[in-house]
Length: 316
Length: 270
Ligand SMILES: Nc1ncnc2c1ncn2[C@@H]1O[C@H](COP(=O)(O)OP(=O)(O)O)[C@@H](O)[C@H]1O
Ligand SMILES: [Mg+2]
Image 1 (tube, rainbow over the protein chains, first blue to last red):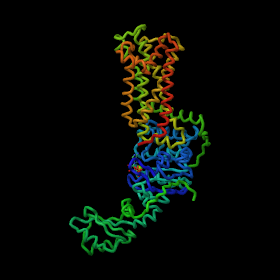
Image 2 (cartoon, rainbow over the protein chains, first blue to last red; image 1 turned 180 degrees about the vertical axis):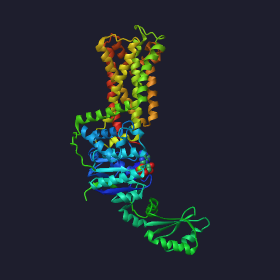
Image 3 (cartoon, helix red, strand yellow; image 1 turned 120 degrees about the vertical axis):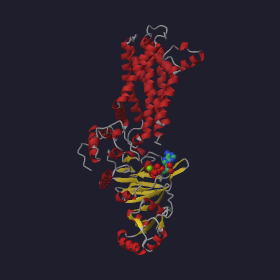
Image 4 (cartoon, chains in turn blue, yellow; image 1 turned 180 degrees about the horizontal axis):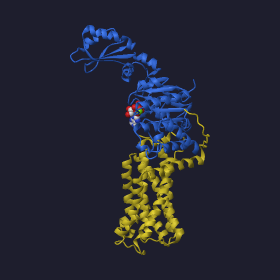
């Protein structure tokens, strides 16, 4: 548990990340993701509860925890006045690498994060995405056994994002335990072995991506009504097609229907539209968004845990 | 990830050796930053030189302290302290900036020694001060300044000036940790420095102050330090003039170093 004055940033979090797996901590702004990471990274003392990393209690053995973790915080923390290369060498030296190893490791990571060309430039001149990648590189310098990444792909372009996804996959395959936070279900889906959904400091759901999606109910069919088309009539025309209630957007222009096996129902949708004569200006099948997850999960799940334990890198 | 081929020359991460290695790394970081910003170097070197020239030519005609032939001989030790104090106030800005940008978080999540972030910064300050002192003294010498008490006393003066700079740096490091906002730390630093400098013997003899201000000036650590420096530069230095300065510096360091380190341990970003 962690409070800031009257705000309870974390309360009722009970999570375990088995060693060598990737846990995705999913939640909207203010959910408590960063606070969770900072507690586990020994940057914030928990007010109550127990958090361990590889069996080491963060409150009583922070020094030992720091030897096994790598942290990339939500905002890239690199020294703008040092070059990318100097930043990584400095972190290497401060992590206990000898001079030569620190140099070697810096080159390795510059290469892996696609920063070799910019290595000799001061980090001030980097784009947001480059700073982010340098920050991630800094977290990997000591080859940590446990890696915390707080919204690592925020601000990356698609190529940078793919590169980082690949890297996280590799690290995990090599046995690194990863806890990453994200606002994107897609990212958690792609990377994480299991997902914990956090809202207002409380775990509201956990499981594999498949399990969560089953709870959320598959894809979403979205119909944008043409001007003059009655959305209620539209919803009526689609009755029985979805797996749940059709909802009409607040501005009365869109009908959203949860559907089980997305593409297979498209011909039926087209047929019903033709039959009813109702007109739509746009029709889309969407994977459940974070919004959908929250719509489906908030309040529903979670008798919130009161035990408050976080165990990262536990043996299975 | 590619397998590492480098020999794993890991360092023993404990004990004084580890602390020293960390301090050296952070000192290197700060010195690197210093040379990396050309405008910073330009201003950081122009400022002390300007101080020397301005005070000598603007005030040198009006102020004639008793017992010295040239005002520059009297003023240089004070100008040293002024330049060092201004420079040290930058340390508050830098530490607040490290907090604001998350650098301190990054350091705190590393297995490094906690105090090294502050000790490395203040050590870099000391190195910079040595350079600034040499520069100012060179310029002053070109316009007439002379040490009057021999080489040993001159070196002792420089060492004392560096020591007082160290005390300033730790004070401002503490200020940066407390204030957290870089801009406020900058303004706060100047607010602290300017009254202390002007209510001291830095530019004019304390005897010219009104009575109540003399009382303040006499206990002002800057007066004590500048008087000691002056004694070492002008000659006739009795140990009794140097001890009070050493006591002040020692006392300040004994308080600010542990206080700042403790504060650092407890401080987080945001
Ligand atoms: N230092 C702080 N002081 C006060 N409130 C804070 C502090 N840090 C975080 N909070 C609050 O705690 C809650 C969780 O924040 P955070 O962990 O940053 O969420 P997330 O990373 O999921 O966006 C928010 O309500 C936030 O305003
Ligand atoms: Mg966050």
